[in-house]
Length: 236
Image (cartoon, rainbow, N blue to C red; front, top):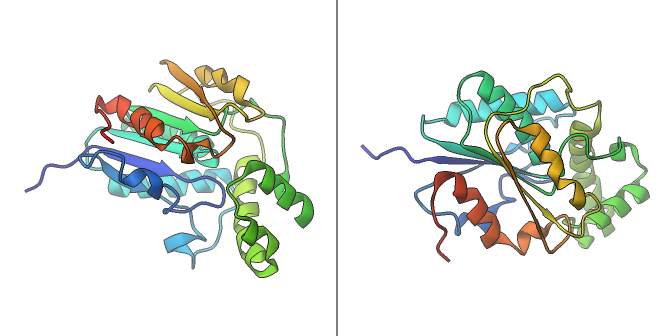
């Protein structure tokens, strides 16, 4: 019988799906079980209804992780929306006595670092401008009415998940360390130290050249960060 492998759970950004981290799959060492998750309404779950509530999204991710857990050490990683939801997921996992080795977050300065935003309520043109500013949304999607109708619906639902209502304030910081990376061109990059408030352990923070989707240009550095809690090197 094969030995169970340590696990890496990946939580996608707004508009993303289980294929959003394919650029990392061949860099992460094969002895790690690479497990990209996805919320309903996209990718392999396209026939399911989109979620519009933060806690419903957290519960969905919790259900997926608990079904996949094998008792081995694991790490939770999320980019942007995935970082915010990842923090809540880790809080819930630790309550169950099954916390990760670390939470890794990118493209997000953490709860409390941003002014309240309601981008999911913007008209289409303003919403497209916001998506262009963030990067990551192909221009052919934004310029094509039919494609934008499909993609925009997913994006609005995801933005509502992270922006509607304040982040729960009465929840204790997580016990595991946090590794946070951001692109230095992001408006909130200088607030990356905010993550220290979210953990009772240490928050390891680092800025890298780039914008919100800097991860695409720094895949090797991201993979090295993801492997740090396991004590594994990345060979590339």
